[in-house]
Image 1 (cartoon, rainbow, N blue to C red):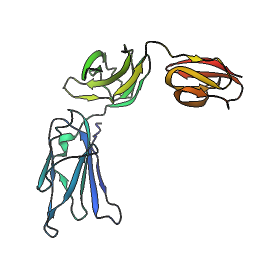
Image 2: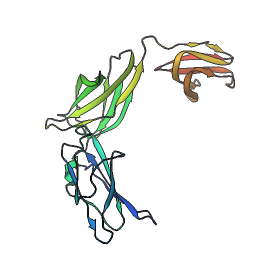
Image 3: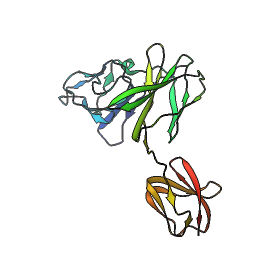
Image 4: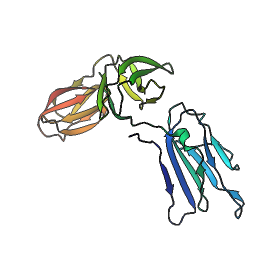
Length: 257
C-alpha cells in the first residue's frame, strides 16, 4: 500500500483570532496554488502570511489565488508550507497533488564514522539504486553506487569512504528507473591524517588529548561514566580503577590512581 507524504493540519488555539493551515510534501517541479478568499465584511483577503520550510516568502497576498513556485528550493526537496490566516475564513489548496509524493520508501537511520557510512532504509525496491555523493568545491560528485536489495521490510547498507583531510560532507540519493529520487540528509565528518592520542595512561587529575575532540569515559563493562568535548579532561573526582576512553572511533584503556 502506498503511503502519501501529505499532511493537512488546522490549528485553532482557543482565544486567538488567527489560524494556521499546514501542508507537507516534496517539490517535484510543479507550482502549488492556494485559494485566498476575500472577506467583504472586513475588506481584506483571508491569508496574512505564508512560510515555506520556516522561511516567510515574499508574495502578493492581495490576490484571490496565490502561486508558490518554489524557485528557491532544489527539485525533490521536502517542503512544509504554513499558511497563516484569519479565523473567519479558510484558504484552500487548489492542487495539493503538485507536492504529493507517492512512496513507501524512507531513510530510517543514517550514521557516519571515521571509517564508514551506514544507512538503514524501509520500502526500497530491487530496481532501485543508491548513489553516494560527496561535496567538492560547491558541487556534489558521485563517488559510488550500490544496488538496492529490494527488501521492503528493511535493509542495511555500508559504504567505506575515502576522506580528505579536514571537513567532509556526504549525502545518499535513492533513485528508481522512472526518474523519481529522494536524497538523505547530509552527513558531515572532520578527518585528520594523524590519529588522536592522549596522555597519561596512569591518571591523577587530568587527561590531555593531542587535539580537541569528543570523548567518552567508560568503565570496563562499557557503561559511560563521563562524556564531553575538549582537549583537557578533568578526572580528579573519578574513583580509582581501570577505565576506557573512546576517541574518534577507537578506544584505549587507562588507570585512575
